Length: 78
Image 1 (tube, one colour):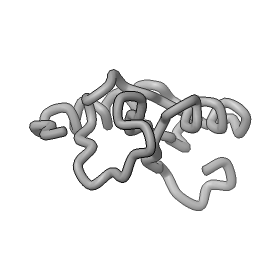
Image 2 (spheres, helix red, strand yellow):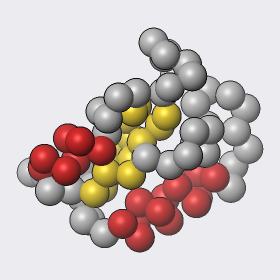
Image 3 (tube, helix red, strand yellow):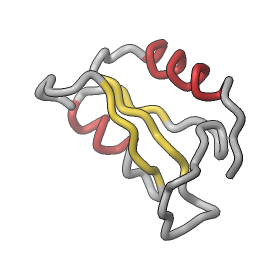
């Protein structure tokens, strides 16, 4: 992310694995509320803890929030 190879990435957050690396690399890491982004197809080691997180290269929180709102508009069938 920090080397500008991709504008955004999704990842899972169980114990800080989205927001901490983002903070270390100077990009925006955003973890929405549990179940906001559909988790279907996710193989999860801790179902009650895993959340889909977003990392953005734009370095603006508004971009991460806008992307989450777009995902939130879709029905989540977890």
